[in-house]
Structure formats: structure tokens, C-alpha cells
Image 1: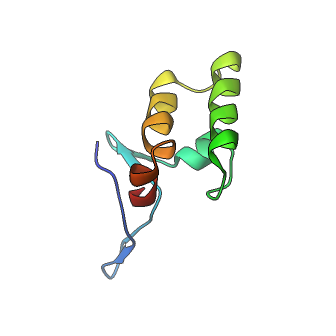
Image 2: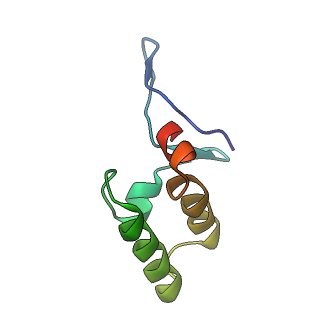
Length: 78
């Protein structure tokens, strides 16, 4: 898994901030949790907890969200 920490335009391809490579698939944790990118920690924790209660998001994405979105340094890079 590689994290993308910038935006690059190389002629044909644009890589965006806020995505993680999950195998061949790119995921956006904000979209998965249905929260804005400027959500505060409480909103992120609430979204993760609700997703766990509903069991509608795979646990691996919830763990990624906890690891990247709840850690200030990692979130800044993400």
C-alpha cells in the first residue's frame, strides 16, 4: 500500500491528494466514510464508529481511516 501525498500532473495522469492504493484500486477514506476532508477528529471517530455498528464498510478501510485520519502527522501527509 502506498500513500499519495501530493498532486502531480505528468501529461496524461493526475495523482490526487487523499487517496491510498489498495492493491490495484485507489481509495479515498473521506468518501468511504462520507465525511468532508476538513472533518474534525470527533466527526471522523463518529463516522468510523457508525460504520462499525452498521458493518457496511470493510474493517480494513476503517483501520486505515483510524491510522491515517486520526493521526495528525499522517493526516497532513494524506
